[in-house]
Amino acid sequence: MAAICARPLAASVLVQLLRLIEGMDPARALVAESLAYATLQGGDEHAQWLAARRAAPRDLPAGRLHVTRVQDVLHLEMDRPGTHNAIDAPLRDALREALDLAVFDPTIGRVELRGAGRTFGVGAELAEFGTTRDPARAHAIRMQTLPALAAVRCGERLVSTVQGLCVGASLELAAFGRIEARRDAIFHLPELAMGLVPGAGGCVSLSRRIGRQRTALMVLSGRRISVETALAWGLADSCVDALVD
Image (tube, rainbow, N blue to C red; front, side, top):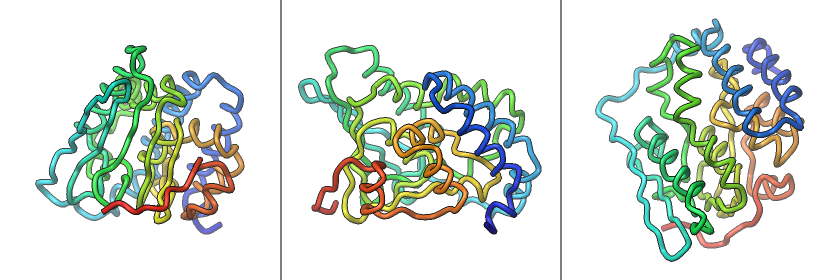
């Protein structure tokens, strides 16, 4: 309740958006999500978060996506050391390119997505928030670069192995396909505290997996979800015992 009171406009937009896109074609729903996200990007609640956030560390490494193919399986590994695989613009663009390849190449039967190290991914790189202050331009950029626009077309061919933190945009992307979770996986959507809604496809991908009520619960409460709860809700499809070295 405290989180909702602190960010009432973002909370209201989230609920309206989830109601609006229920049953909507996923590609169209992603456009609606982006427009809602853009609205909040230009709002006071997000501006307050931007003003209060800590200065970002300098000289962060650019994200890399290791792409290999073995027979009909496309292997994708997100790798950004020192950032828990936070998705920056280079990594985002590489993900979109690789997923587009899977969409257009019918000989690719499976896309396996992983994160290097002990963390699947902590979502979008926070240092890049506020880079584009024009909401209309930000929406236009998302419609060209958002990996979710390709992931939604991959469907069940996309399989993510999740370990450690699976947060924000990382979770939103993985939820478009099958999620095989390690026992140490933790699922979290922190966007409300930023005065935003999930904007990397999560309002679409999660609501179609766990329903709009549970999606709203995750966002509005900021609650972290364990593997057990994720399996019970259908957020994760299976649990893999072995941990990543």
